[in-house]
Length: 203
Ligand SMILES: [Zn+2]
Image (cartoon, rainbow, N blue to C red; front, top):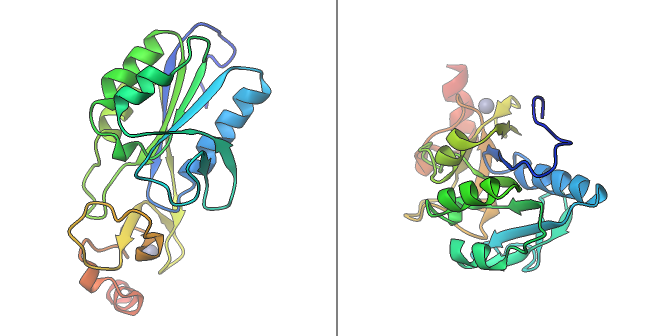
């Protein structure tokens, strides 16, 4: 968080936390929101209703940390639900909210709020996952969280899908994914077995 005017009030900005699955995005979002709350800043957190893996009314990390949040079906719901006094806004799993999120985030920051957005920066095929790339471009701060490759143990920034499916994201199917590094990752779930990848990498 270098370079951000953390103590300046009435000065909005945008922070993006992004990376693969299992990289600790939600954990980092929760950490920042908890710190803001300790600083007595009014905080609101939102997450898309498609993501109800753990709890409807909390953002929950894989490690079990949580902060109260409101489920939204669409970007307009966030605009409607943000309280005038709110200084810090957290939005988790932003890849489910689409490109309409970008102008809203700009608007909220221009109103003097700190907006922290977390989400997947790539889909399982390694394709940039809107609206995260667009938000990264307009953000004052971007944090790329890294997971651990389940094949070789190096730092990982890709999400490996282990089962064949057409959907861009399989909601509620964390067991269908694992984190992989650039070398061990493949866009084709049929070629994803750990032994095969480990052999391919060694060879
Ligand atoms: Zn690896």
